[in-house]
Length: 182
Image 1: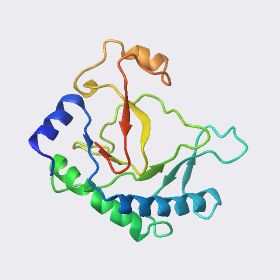
Image 2 (image 1 turned 30 degrees about the vertical axis):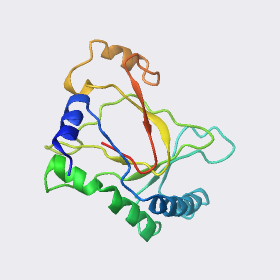
Image 3 (image 1 turned 90 degrees about the vertical axis):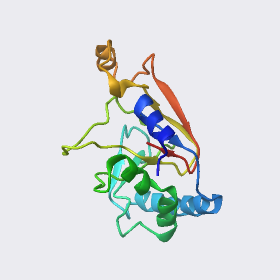
């Protein structure tokens, strides 16, 4: 599914943004479904959530876990995921034998959670793993250090000393609704 140019960009930079290939109506319908899912989570109807830095007067919902759970999954979300082609992208990178380890909706509302610097890596696997994000909304919320997957940082201690701070070599990623980030 990925062409050779896209694979080369991913291999070289450590990440790839795939332009939107999803119809605006499908995105809009998925956004409406997501709003219903978020309300269930906020109202305690759906309990599988992440709350970070909860110093606000309302629940600072940072994530909704188990996105394929029967209590929240609906056809509009399925359509969005299918049209995103993430399964095809994963197979074109990893081969036919793939499995999903984690699925989560990330949220940023009144207060944003800033995670610590980390390297995505294999978890409980002998083989390669990847992270794929599909965006329901336009967003600038993820930082990467290009080519960091290829080498050890000369100043990796700087990241460990200030795990929440921007790194001088980091780059903010701008994404639009319907785009895919690998």
